[in-house]
Amino acid sequence: MSNSDVCKVKIVGATGYTGGELIRLLLNHPKVKIVSLTAAGFDNPQPAHAFWPWLRQVIDLPIRPEIDGEADGADTIFLSVPHGAAMKLAPLYYEKGLRVIDLSADYRFPDLSERQGWYEGEHTSPELCGVAVYGMPELFREQIKHARLIANPGCYPTAAILSLYPGIKLGFFEPERIRVNSVSGVTGAGRNPKLPFHHPEFDQNFFAYRIGKHQHAPEIVSVLRRVTGKPVTVTFVPHVLPLQRGILSTIYCRKAKDVPLAEIWNAYQETYAREPFIRLYPLGEAPALQAVRETNFLDISLHEDAMTGDVVLVSAEDNLTKGAAGQAVQNLNVIMGFPEKMGLLPL
Ligand SMILES: NC(=O)c1ccc[n+]([C@@H]2O[C@H](COP(=O)([O-])OP(=O)(O)OC[C@H]3O[C@@H](n4cnc5c(N)ncnc54)[C@H](OP(=O)(O)O)[C@@H]3O)[C@@H](O)[C@H]2O)c1
Image 1 (cartoon, helix red, strand yellow):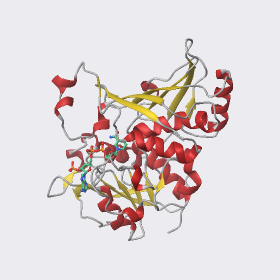
Image 2 (spheres, helix red, strand yellow):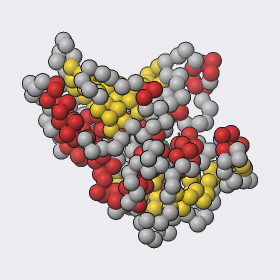
Image 3 (cartoon, helix red, strand yellow):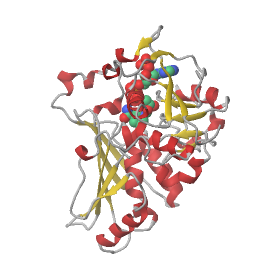
Image 4 (cartoon, helix red, strand yellow):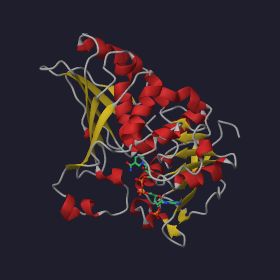
């Protein structure tokens, strides 16, 4: 298969939120043809607009019950399914020589001991954990170019890792006991109804959850340790608020050396100058969710606390785009040698 060909794509989990976002993005991608859409919770094919009303008269393809490992003519499989389900499907497609981009957490830890205690159950395809490449182009672009199994990053880790990476790597921040507070829109919880997100319960509400024990904490630490070589630890507290989409993170770091904030900002600017989807804000400005909604951007700002001298980072992303489906398409572009912005920005 030549890397300049049009990609034939199957989306497994097409009735879920990240699957729906993949459909939205890939329908507008000039080098992609969606050839198959599947999900799990029904017995007969359904029109796509039964799940996504905006697809009426836009797409003829039905959403069918998934037949595990059936490629349906695709060369690339996006797995938009819960963790645990992905590790059963990925090997079936991978062994057929197909590209697999997994949006779940199943292949994000090359060292399985790092997921122990954070995810339930034994891993059923541990042999692929060492093969998968963590799909964060800003940090692993060269490896992604040659990958056939991508572990697409988590939504919260995308923001935390990319916000912290230059500051830790270049020795500006103490790597231990970093505080990460993140606030997410409710699509982060998936499309299956849950009582706390029922409208009368959730409207006008706002709360923290899995405080100090969210499964994205070890992912943040694992990747940052690998790319910086520093003994990173974080206290991570996620929150959810009644917005559809978006994650705003506020991150608190102690300086490891007495340098002006402008010097740290310059280092960030240099690190990310050529990254198409990272926008560093000028000192004194901070991002907000409206600026990133339905985009693949991660917006970052740096601040200094006037009392302690600590550095405060603020970052904004769309959990379904840069935090999931957009980053997955960015990974596809890197693998295929397409322009990295293709299908993700008006060109
Ligand atoms: N939502 C986010 O912001 C976000 C961000 C980053 C990563 N992720 C990850 O992306 C994955 C999907 O998340 P989501 O929010 O899109 O979840 P979701 O809205 O709950 O959708 C999950 C989809 O997977 C399907 N599915 C479940 N088990 C399956 C199986 N065995 N075979 C085929 N299809 C199956 C579901 O179909 P039925 O409903 O018909 O069973 C549904 O279409 C998860 O692993 C999640 O952690 C999500």
